[in-house]
Image (cartoon, rainbow, N blue to C red):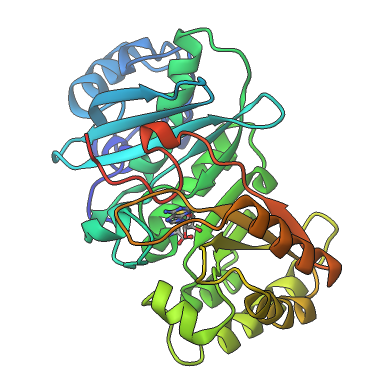
Length: 345
Ligand code: SAH
């Protein structure tokens, strides 16, 4: 857990003698979109509300700046946290006309993927669970106040940071979201660079909620993946395959699959050989989905694969019997797309 005290911990510290149901009321209260401060929480006794209002921040950021994409399909917010750190979170319209919130799990990131803008920041610190769920609360409240149409139906942990490098806070955030929103576990996706020990840990952890997982594969060729993602060690792909088998065995159900994200980089990982490697890697695993991701420009010296090549690549995979989807990219004009979150503001 991050060393920042959470709201729940502060509440328990300030009101040690209150019965447990009051703690639960307080935990639920912050998710009530009608309320904007502790003073509003009418079910709590007056004195508790007053103390909470002066001692516990209602929300963990104290300033925000919103950018809107020209097509109004994506919004990015830069949030300023109590210690002055900045994080970014994105709200985007999905194909069904509902909304997906993309949350950050760390300030910066230590993984140093060579195509990602966040990686250039290095890791500043972990977020605590409140700072993670408050990104969702921020958008929910804003949509409510602005009377925006549609609901937030999905949450993706694809903002700044590596969620599995902040395991406990992410797990607690997931638990809070599942308990206090009507978003179910199959509508929440945690995306990871593939930290094998932590991936194994979560399979053994009864407290880890059954949310969807996506692994950023980006190449099934050892050398290429090493070049793209410095976290790749010599037997990474073997270990990942072994883990994936374990995962799929454990979550055997129609609704369960494992997603591999695959960034399409021109001349790097998008030719027939790379498709072959990917097929050899993914095919034996069974229920996996390959999500092809268009590259969003950063300062890195890469170019996205041309649409024709993406089509061809997808064709090879489909022909081999793999389940392929293509990610729509939103918010590029406001640097809100995957891999572009780097606190430019
Ligand atoms: N640390 C997590 C979440 C990162 S962001 C992870 O590694 O999965 C979510 C996805 O965006 C990841 O698959 C990441 O590799 C990808 N991404 C990073 N930079 C990108 C870029 N410039 N263009 C497109 N996708 C990018």
